[in-house]
Structure formats: C-alpha cells, structure tokens
Amino acid sequence: MVVLKGEEDVSRYSFHQLPYVSLLRRYIPQPHKKSFRSVTPIHLMTLTREEEEVSEHVTKEEPKIKWADVGYAITEAQKQAISELSPKMSNRCKALMKRIICFSPQHESLPLLLASWVKAMKPRRADWLSILKEMKRVENPLLTKVMEYALLEDSFEANVRDYTKIIHIYGKHNLLDNAENAYHAMKSRGFTCDQVILTVLIDLYSKAGDFIRAKEVFEEIKLLGFSPDKRAYGSMVMAYVRANMLDCAENLIKEMEAQEVYAGKEVYKALLRAYSTIGDSNGAQRVFDAIQFAGIVPDTKLCALLVNAYCVAGESDKARSVLENMRSARLKPCDRCVSLMLSAYENENNLETTLAFLIELEEDGIMIGEEASQVLARWFRRLGVVDKVEEVLREFSDKKVKRNALF
Image (cartoon, rainbow, N blue to C red; front, side):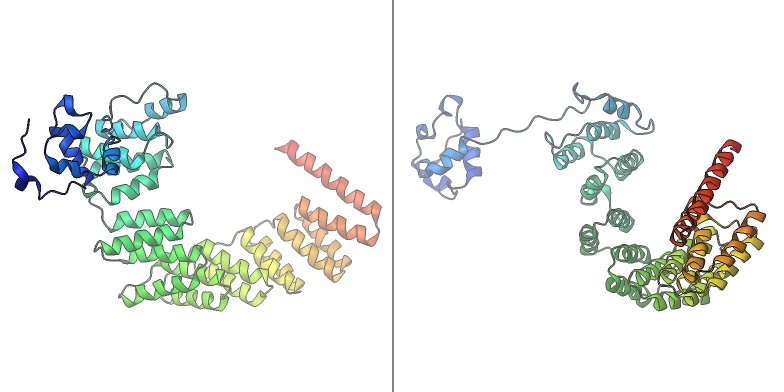
C-alpha cells in the first residue's frame, strides 16, 4: 500500500482532474475500492460529486485483437476473398487484409483497427504498399480510407507521389474538396509541388468544370519553369471545351503542335464534337485536318461528326463529299453517317438526290441500317406514301434476317 506523506506531498495535485482519480484507484487496496470516503486523507474529500459519478464509469481497456483469428461468422464470399490473397504477402500483411475483408463498420472502427495493427506488427513502408496494392487489385472500398490513415503514419514514410495517387483517386470520384484538403495537407508537411501533381490538379479542375482554377494551375506550371506535357495540355484543352471557349482550345492545340506535342484522340474528338453540335463546319474541318496532321487515322465516328457539322450548317454537298472520301479510303459509312445525310436531304426536300444516293450505297454493297430506315419511313409518311414506307421497312427486315443468317 502506498502511504501519502502529509499535506505538502499531495497539495500540489489537483483533485478535480479525472486522470488523478483513476490513478488513485490503482493504489487503493481492493477492499476499499467501493468507496472513496474510506481513504483517510482529508484532501480526498474535496472530490466533487460529479467526479465520483464519472469515476464509476471509467471504461475498461478494450481486449487486444487476436490477429490469427477472424472469427467464425464470416460469409462464403469473405472466405473466398481470403483464400485468394496474394501468396507473396507477409503474414503481418495477411493478418490486416483478413480483418479488412471481414470489416464491419457497425461493430468496428477502421482507425482503431489500423492503429492496433501498427502497434502490434511494427510495419514498414513495404508492408503498407503491399496492403494498398492488394486492396487496389481486389477493388476494396476501404482503399481510400486506409490510404488517408497511412499518409499520417511515420512508418509509411509518405512522399509526394503518395499524395499524387490519392488526389488522383479523389478526382476519379469527383471528390474535389477531399482532393484539395489532401493537397493542402501535403504542402503543410513541407512537400514541394512538382509538375506531376500540378498536372493531376489541372485534370481534376477540368473535369469538375472549374475552368478558372484549372487555368491558374496551368499557368503555375509555366511560372515554375516546367513545360506542360501532353496530359497537362490535353486537360487544359478539355477545360476550354467544357467552358465553351472553342477558339482558345484550338489555339492551345496549335501551341502544342508548334512544340511537336500532340493531344490524344479523345481530346480532338471532344473539340470536333463541340464544333459539330453548333454547326460550325469551318471549325470542325480545321480540327479534322489537325487530327490527321497529328498522325491519327480518322474512324467512322470522327467522320460522322464532320458530316453532322456540314448537315447542321445546311451544306449537304460538302457532307456528301466527306462520305465520298470515306468510300475512297475504303472506310464504310456507318448507319449514323447515312441517316445524317438522309436527314439533310429531307430538310431540303430533295427526293431525287436521295434516291441517287441510295442507289450508290446499294451498288457499293452498303445496306441501310435501322436509324437510316427510320428517317426514310418518317419522310415517306410525311409525303403520304404509305405503301412505300411498308416496302422500305419490309426490305430492311428481310436484309437484317439474311445478314444474321450469314453470321
């Protein structure tokens, strides 16, 4: 038993602090734990009633996690997932992965689970990376949460690339606030921003439709002395397209070409679609030419966008020329191209040219698809040629049956 030696030894302590109450309980003999009033020093009588009530509800320490046992109430799917863990994983990593696979948010706390694992297993960076790699492979929904925790652990030894990865994940899920918080946390820890993470931010802001901030980060790359790469340029072009600033997007593509940097096919396609939608045939043709200059071979979808641009602009002759060029390049016009051409002729009420166009397609062995047939049917109904409509639909049905029989 510990004996308190007079008032001077105890008066320097505050008896109104709960931790001291817990400390006293450790030194009071077992028979006297039921009541604090049995302790003789008068200073203990200064404990407030509230502290006495709280001291009775001091929580006991939680039992240690048995890492070798995941319990018996696990599903067959969980058993299967556990059996498919990579054999290259260390035992300490497998122990955590088993717990993550069987994790129940209703009964467990992920931060406490990870803290217990760190305390018991003393992991190194390689162990954390092994866990994250396996979680990514199986597409575990807790991946982001584990990454967030790992970034704050000394044993993880976080670097700039780790923050880049989690910001990229936030961007894929459109979690702009989370991405910005991670970025500011990275800077607060003294990490220097480089071109890679700034490019990720441009892409993030571009997809979120925040043109102003995307532009700011793009200019920051240049101010830091870096040359924007293909991805940075592409993300900025997409930001211009989403902001409906097509001239700026096209100028940026020209800037890229001057540096012999070429955007990806999807970037060109987005700009071409934007011009096509508003019927700007000149802009669409310029982008289409730029696509070929970049060494990208146009496919039927790109050609269809150019055809649509001319059709919307009321230039059916130029749209027809695009189809002729496709046939010359042995590129079969898709159903969408044909339907666009027919719709343009319908708007012009040019039935004679339509018939000549259909004959050419038939001679080249190009069958009219469903969308094009619907355009013809609608047009013929409007003209009151009901019998011709039925004939067109019947011919389309017969050709479709024959084509299915061949394959």
